Image (tube, rainbow, N blue to C red; front, top):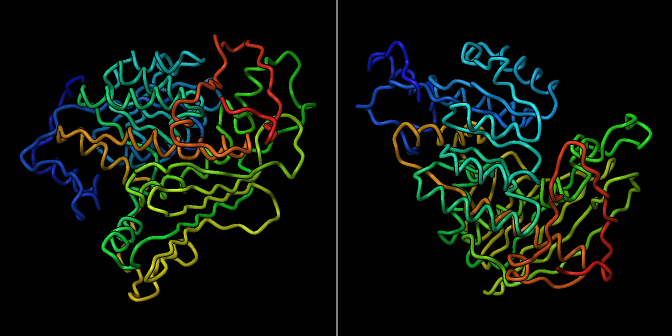
Length: 433
């Protein structure tokens, strides 16, 4: 990292550290050691300048007062411009948005140019289909990483992500995953209550993710003349399985991650599922609803349901049933437990999205890497496993999901690639591969 021309004294640094990490120092997460002084700016690169990437970049700069955004990667220059404009309007961080025109990289290979530009940290926030490639490249380049969920859209991608996570450990690279609920103090405290026996033995977990479509597919008539399949699909990435993994894998994977977390990240034995598309859509090949039943070795059942349809009842909640009570998350402002033990969360909530970056940058400053990579991959696989069961109509084991050879990512992808869209999966006809 390049040395700063001026070095703040210790008093200024500690003031900065307290402001940047906020709750991180107050509630016992890794903190910057008091004897340390900041002599280097942390240069940040952003890969994917959409809404989530822009938000993550803001949180990164808020996490460390000596972090600077110095490079971006996008396929759409308009998104780069929009992201930099938005970040430049935030007074606390505006003077640390230092992305010269030469470092605003455009194209499918732009991520590598960001990695080669001298950044120390990279934010990976493109459509999930690209995640395994970008993650592997970032680890190979020795960069600290904030990696949005999910880790990929198919089993080969998950196996790649698992390998990258292990390599990150050997290189002492911090890898923080975008499974934000793991950084939410409400859920941390609630799961501790459950693990300490507040509802007795857990017997079932029911998670809902009912919402509206994220990015509806536009009519084919709106496709500009001459636009390639690759460009059309990437611009409408949420509607194609190879890019988003379907709604279960891209969005409801947050609920899968909470299930995995409470199950101590031990995989289920198998799952069965149903799903389909009720509302017709022109183009694309994703479902608009899923219902997955996971079977765990200890007899626990976990049920994950999601729907993305306009005009319906919406809910994002968790119902955890035990032998001595029930825990409910999401039906009221704070989690609660009712039964043999009655408990309601009463802490002071902090921003879980900001918390992810506070922990990441504190780990870098302190020289104590954190690595969320394995659970990033396995929680994603839990959702992929459910999709596979719904698509095929078969019971799918964890080993079948992990070892699947179905590779969704188009070979030799370029911006001009022709990419035929596979038909939407049909249970009982679509084969497990």
